[in-house]
Amino acid sequence: MHNIVISDTSCLILFHKIGELDLLRKVYGSVTTTPEVAQEFQEELPEWILIENVKDKKYQEFLETQIDWGEASAIALAKEKENPLLLLDDLKARKLAIKLNLKVTGTLGVIHKAKQIGILEKVKPLIAKLQATNFRISENIVEELLRKNNETSMVE
Image (cartoon, rainbow, N blue to C red; front, side, top):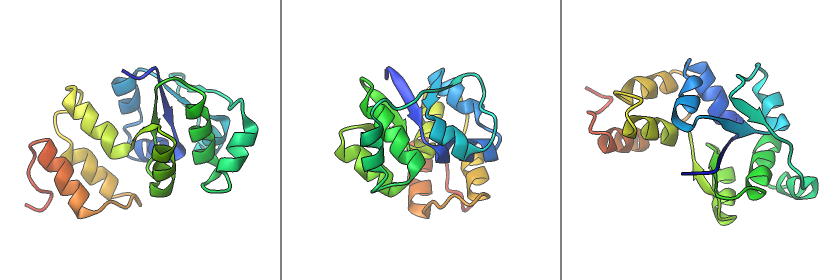
């Protein structure tokens, strides 16, 4: 179990868009984010999403030379914690976080975990909702996620 789950903006926005923001609470109990992510989110966050400032602003500024502001703040905060799980969807930010030895998952990983622990009966309805947004996801990844969860193809 992770001591702390830190989310970037994309996961919050996607779950909010599909009306499933509470899934994060159901899976992780509470989620932490940064003021920068909260500002990017542009909606009021529920009380179970904690907002914490990054202590090492110089490190955050350095990360901002490589990735966007919100992602940099989330990664910088994660580096200050012991055994965090970072929720990131952006590939460039994920690769950087992994290079920094951080444990990473994304929106689809949260959905998969929710199914595995019995919160969701099926992943397919949430995937369909995500595909109706501007979230880019390859068919191969969708098929792999469905297969891992013993669900049939989206194309039936």
